[in-house]
Length: 164
Image (tube, one colour):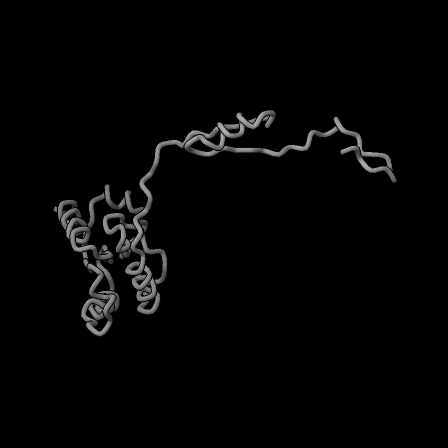
């Protein structure tokens, strides 16, 4: 079952802390050979930190999930977050893929989990310091808009200093 296989593949990548390069679809032999070459290149230390896979078919739900518009396609994830696959948008060429793979392996940070909507606290006028402190102390975003109130303060006459 395609979905189960993919799940196990990703679980294994998470367990072994390896970035993922997954080829989906019937690819031209050149791409398959290129990935095999990467997989077998022992002199490249970083290649050992990548889990390579090839699936000829993928479930429609996964096609939709990963926004696969055409096959073959390459899905990749970072070493820091192996289970989160993203569609590789670059050209399927050896040097382009190799650069992308090098970045995947170096990226050890996981993507931040999607948070629920962060509260935004708007302060219309900063009239007292307590109000500003309360806004800045909020867990979320405090928006302070410095708005010039037009028309209330006429410009000072020329040659005179404005009253401070």
